Amino acid sequence: MDYDVIVVGARCAGSPTAMLFARLGYRVLLLERSAFPSDKISTLYIQQPGVARLKRWGVLDAVVATGCPELDHVVYELDEVRVEGCAAAVDGVSSAYAPRRHLLDQILAEAAVAAGAELQERCAVTGLLRGGDRVTGVRYTLPSGKEATARAWLVVGADGMRSTVATLVDAPKTVEHPRLTCAYYTFWHGLKTYFELYEGDEGWVSAVPTNDAVLVSAYFTQDRFDEVRGDAQGAYLRSVEVNAPALFAQMRAGEQVERLRGTGDQQNFFRQAAGPGWALVGDAGHHKDSITARGIGDAFLQADLLTGHVGDRLGDEEHLAQALASYAEERDRLLTDSYRATLLVAQADARPQRKALLRAVSTSPDLTQRYFDTVAGVRPVSELYTPELRALLSPAAESTPSR
Image (cartoon, rainbow, N blue to C red; front, top):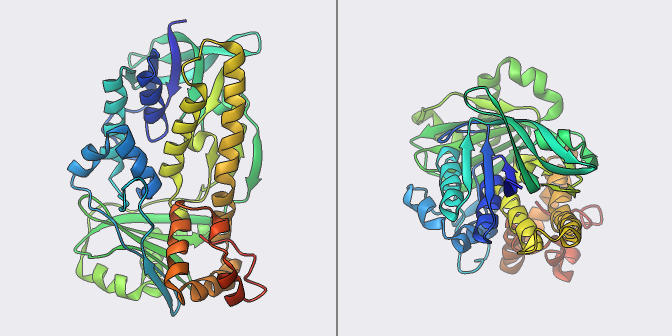
């Protein structure tokens, strides 16, 4: 084999995976279709468990050094109901962060290279090498346009929701639900906000302070996508004005500093996570609506899970097969609750249940803390539903998971 591991995609899932495998002493090739620094569509927000992983990996200091502000206060407002708080600390980390992706992704890629991974940019995978039913490597194009091949014991697809690796291995979607929202966002100067989410008659609006500006996003129901994209800027501004008027007032006095970006392709699925000689991490294997801002943290989690299960016995075929199966099982187990909760947050017709939940949560400091812990992934959904909360909820709302 030319390498022990080939990782396709060098962003929030791929670079940590390559870094962790390299730290185990493996020869790692990391292929990236674009070049750094470069941006991509993202909510940017990293909850406390994800930040704790950055700290554990030794890269949090580099993220903080970019000037990214600490986010230690969260506001969620639905009509007249408002809850405020912050998730509990994880391994001493009490703040979330929302670094710009052109900064974060480069930091992660540099950490992978520092660990010993070989990074090749502007390289697009075009095919897989096989030995029988087992994946044994990749075929890819170099920046010059020439084709190259590389062989490895394990090929990891970390190449996003429309993963080339997932397509080439024909990884089926084991769980899938319809798209629920479309989203548009841009950056503003002159705003002072916490991490804020507002829900109103025309959808959802979020504000996230980042390195040099505040990211303001508007979410619409999926059935409005054609209407919204016909006048995206107008629909975006109207949504903020209706759903978050105080934030809109700040925007009127502020300055939009980048073009509006958006997507109507927010898929909800789990794909088969692994097979003979291959595995998927990040959005390649599991994607959900970005409204709950769990994508980056979930990518970090999967990088940890895969490398932890494989460990230092990659060359043992029997062990590798079992490790990949265990990784797939644990990935689904750990991410299913947040997937279901995200579907409910993004369903417009579940708004009465969300409002009842928020109203009940707001009556108790303990419930408020549990709520924000659940939102961030610090504790499972089951730990939110105490006897106290169940007594406060109406029968219709009692079985509704949190954000």
